[in-house]
Image (cartoon, rainbow, N blue to C red; front, top):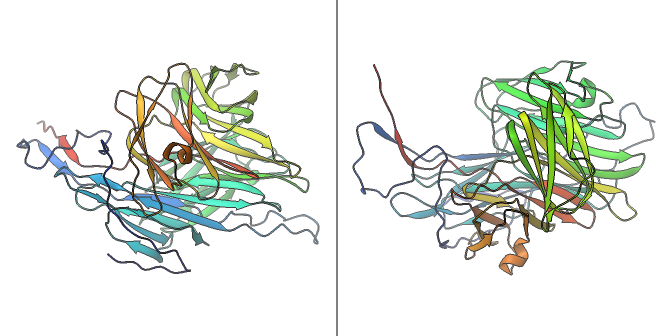
Length: 487
C-alpha cells in the first residue's frame, strides 16, 4: 500500500467488513459467476473491471463577477472547497472481497495521494484549490465502488450557502435545465477534459419559446487536463429560463452547472446542478428538502408537447399550483409548484424530455438558499454516495413496490450491517442516514434488486444552506458477455 499526502490531509485506517447480500451487478453484463463454476463457450469473453473516475470542479469560479461595477465594489472571499472520497469492498467472481484503491490528483495530473486496495477507505475533508480527479483503481475482477463528493459552504458573505456535489463521471453529452442569466444570477458551465486527447465541446441553448442562438462562440476546444468556464450570461443575457446541452467529440468530458445568486447585497445562495438523466417520456426528480418548488422541462423533440406534473410526498400525493405545461419544440418550460414538502416530482410527456427541479427557502434574516436537482436514473445494484461532513443528509426514494438495502460507511471505511427499507407505491420515503444507523456515517451503500424500479437522490442542509446530491452510477463489473460472429 502506498500513501502519500500533502496539505496536511488526515490519516486513515483500514479494516475489513462483510455486507450481507451486497454483490455488485453490472448493467449490460451477465451476473458474475464464481471462478470455475462453468465452462465458458468459445463465443464468450471475460471483461475486466474498470477504474471509476470522478471529477470534482474545485473552488467556486467567480472570476469577473464584479466586472463593470463600481471600482470600490469587491466580492467576498471565495469560501474553501473540500473533497471527500470513499471506497468499499466488492465481491469478485472467485468469491474474494476487496475495496479498490483510490488515487486523488489534480486534473492536470499532479498527485494528491494514493491508497492501495484495502478492506475499506474513507478520506478526510481534503482541502482543494484546483479541479480534482478521484480515481477508483480496480484490482483484477473487483469493481471499483468508489465515490467522491465536493463541498463549498459559508455562513455569511456574498457566497453564503451550501453547494455540495457528488463528483461527476465523464460522458459525451450532458443536459442542464437550471440556467438563469437574469439580474443577480450568475450561471456558468464548468467543463473539464479528463482524457488523454483533445476534445471539442459544442453548446446549445433553449429558452421558453424555443432554441436560442448564442451571442458568442458556442464551440470550445479543451486540451487534456484542461478546464474551462463558460459564462452563460455572455451567450444568452437576461434569460430567466435557460436549458443547456453540451456535446463532446474526440473523447469524454465532465461538466456541471454552477450558479450563484445575489439580490443586491443580499446573498441568495450557491449551488451546482449535476447532469440530468437522458431525455425520456417519463422522469422523476427526488427533492429531499421542503420549500418553494419549481420544475424545468426541456422538450428535445421537433414538435410541441405537453408535460404532466405530479408531486408525491411522504404522506402521498401533494396538491401543486400547476400540474401541466405546454412545451414548444426545442424549448424549456418552467412550472411553479408552490410550497411543497420533501418528496418526488414525476413528469410525464408524449415526447422525450429532460427535467430538473429547484427548491428555495428563506434562511432567517440572511437571505435565501436553494437546491437544484436533475431527473435521475433508477437505482441499480451496488451504488455508493459519499456524504459531506457537517451538513445534515437526507435520502429521498420515490414511489415503488419492493425494498432497497442500505448500509452506512464509517469513518474508517468499514460498513455497517445492511438495513432493508420497504417502499410504497403511493408515497415517497425519506431516510436520515444518521438516524437509520445510529451513528455518524460518511457514506451510504445502496442496493436495489432488479425488480425494484425506484428513483432516489439526496440533499444536504445546514442552518444557512441547502444542496442536492445525485447518487453516482454503479461501477463497471466483471461478467461473461456473449459475442456472436456472423459471416
